[in-house]
Amino acid sequence: MRCLNPLKDHLLENLWCPMCMEGGKVFYPRLRKNKKMKIFTLTNDVNFREIPFFIDNKLIQEEEHLVWTSTSLKKIRLETELSDVRVLQGLFKEEEHSRNPHFLEEYFPKDILNLDFSSQNQESLCEGEIKKELESMDGIIGLEDRKGANGFVLIYTTILEEAGDLNVNEIKISLGLNELGQEENVEESVQTISTLEDKKRNIYNLMKRICKKYNYNELKINDVLLNIPQENKKLYSIAGIFKK
Amino acid sequence: MKKFDINKLTEKVKGIYEAQIKWNEKCWRDSLAENGKKIEILLHNLELFDVWERSLKSKFKVVNSKFTPEILMDGYISVHLSCTGLYKQAHASMRLQLESVLRLIYFSQHPIEFGWWIDEDDYFKKRDVWADGFHYFKKLENYKNFLKKCKANGYGGDFFDDIANLYSKLSKFVHGGPTSFHTSGGNLSPKYKKNEFNKWLSNFVDLGGKISLILILGFPEEFKAMTKEDQKKILNTIKDKKLKKAIIKTIGIKLRGRV
Image (cartoon, rainbow over all chains, first blue to last red; front, side):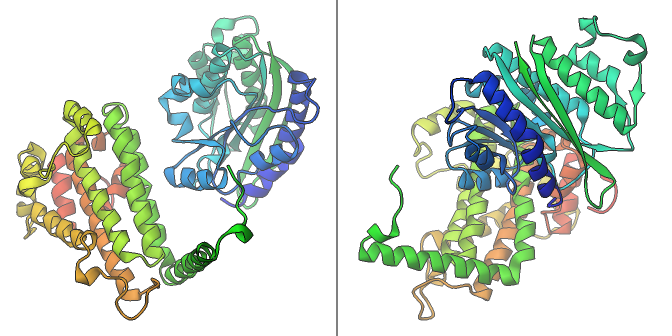
């Protein structure tokens, strides 16, 4: 569990924060002292450094943030550590409301959507259920759209393994992406992929297409793949700025 | 909100604040130095209330959202109080936990009464759901079957007598019985006491198992719908093998491997 902490710090400093800073310039060009962005973040009770880090970097202020963690005991810890932040708890990708998140309506829209699924169940480090994670992403982007968000910084982080297949077509059908048609490639639509490079490339494309489904176009996207020490697994994070 | 400044505190307030900070830290450290691994297991068991919360959410939304977090927190607070040497209060918190579990079962089937209880918290007067020797629970089919299975599996006691005995034991702490005094032994400030801690631990584990049994019997379909892994974790909180066998047979589940 602790082995992810330095990796998260690396992502925070080299991918997440730079992307959020650029997003701040895009969405709040007039605010110079503090961008006053609002964040929704999946985090854990030990390393929730994105909140103080973004505050220090004048991206967000101390209030009006929404944090999601997996268990009640973690919620208790986070509520104690981050007293001005609203903490929700549950298995995010399993929750009915992650696909159809009416429960979250009152807290949205947000400017930064940090969907760090690697933070949610660090006790068992294995490849995240990417299909469920992307379905959750779809639910959240749909919520942003319904709540009138003009744009956002979207961060998606997951654990990838060399082993295991990813059925891209199944995900596309589940998310209704096949109906978009224009970018569809017959060869691509039937494939099941298993190499890390292919997984990365497909996650990258799927994230863009989920946003496109709600008319959010990408202004910039970057990604990072890190080795998890002493594990034959990788931490993959992709961050982008999306705008209508 | 005003910012805290220790230098602005008056003499007695500063005294109690500093004493309590030190007392908490010392008791926590002494308790964990000897019992850290045991507490880790208790905390894992407390997280099982998250599993119950998820399982009950769709069918018993309101009652579940009211009681399940409270049940978890009563247990969590009991751990906290025992680790700060407050064994009397730690037991009182356990009685609250048991009461909330019994009410959760009752109100899940009585949503109208639940509304009355919310509006008027002494709705039951002195005859709460466990009154008359658990009369209400004894009438429920699952509990009746369970009692039969207990006998068939050689369990000598009566499950509801056991709960009544535990409830009575916890009540002595609530009502300040002489055995529950924390000022006995010449100290005013609570300290880590091995015997007291072990007594609390034994009662906490006993209560945890009984709560699991009560919840499984109260929500058998929801329990059956859980993953096998979660089912095993919940069953593992029941330490009495005969009771464990009886509950598995009562609800009719099959589990591979040792439970």
